Image 1 (cartoon, rainbow, N blue to C red):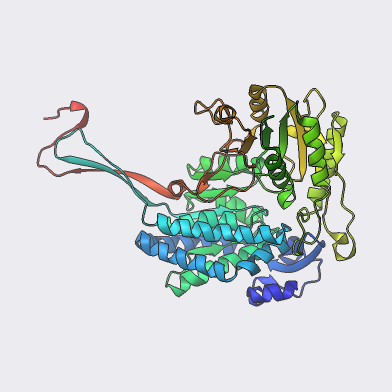
Image 2 (image 1 turned 120 degrees about the horizontal axis):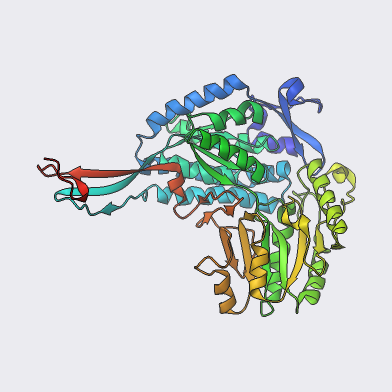
Length: 514
């Protein structure tokens, strides 16, 4: 089945993809990285790694292509993006299935991820006619002032394994209509999805006469990643990953006065008020915490529930968890697939053990799942609900574990709940379930006294952002914004323009120099 899927997507004929591998290849010994199926623990295919020369050649082509691409009118650039979006529509199910096969999220989520790229392509097409500046009055007679937005240059896109298609799409579709060229360094855990995704985009670009707009460099952090973030030819680096990775990328890029767009970790909480629609809160919390096996940056990791309803709600939550079906991500009826690798399983088990030592109670899950047949070698775990001690002191919950662990805390006042939510170093996504409009507005307090996250939702969960709004977070989440709204500005540079259409020499601030 896997080989047929790769064949339909053209991967079996790609020179970078190695089908006749032994299963023992390593980057160090063979220059090949294996793409592993996390549901079985077995390799899908090998991918040849790029070396320093390949990186240099790719970067040089991107820089040369930018000089011509920026001259193409933005609406024409939008036409390219429109055709790319339609090309992804043609392979939506197959490409979504590849995401599920390689990353482990269920097929519906894999298809949904590719749909995000299609959606952002549609958004970008419209945006290609809306890259608007502003005009402002000049204090000098017979002068005009305006702002305009100009293409930025080649941009480096560094993505993580958990969204091997959509995060690139958010950046690349907007970058393309902005007039930039893209060089993508994908995660070595999910290189097949990256090859399939990028090949389609560049094929459409080539058919329209635009070479080297979308390029891919598959290499190690040491050979490709470090070179890219230090390279002055990339005025913008967009990087998605851990907070630690983001600090390193940010410091290196800042050292050369480049621009960074960082999308880093999340330790997201949902607050549940006594007057909330508890059925809605239950469904949203379960999906937010176990969807993608807890491997979304927006996954719900903490539940902060009013003490008056905690016991009854948690009992229903545990019952719902125990009905969640684990299994093959591509199989109908599966709701939760595997973690990405054995290291993630170890991190999951370590966090559970630490929580117990700190006085927490594991109410359900928290162990490796016992799978049978071909799935016996997969990286499956049973999603956990962990109740904090009465003191609400649980240090392990302050750190993000990229796995399906939901820590449960209680509160007595809304102010206390918001303070608990904001107490972590990350600031990506947040949610409240409440019937009272006063509670909702306090959570969204325009003074900033409510949620301190980049995303704040009322009566919906922390996970599942739409492309129309800007996506990103504050604090250790990095401060970047991708996708909708005016996020296109991250991929362009602002220029203030003034024109004197008179004959007199005039200075601002009333200065006379005669």
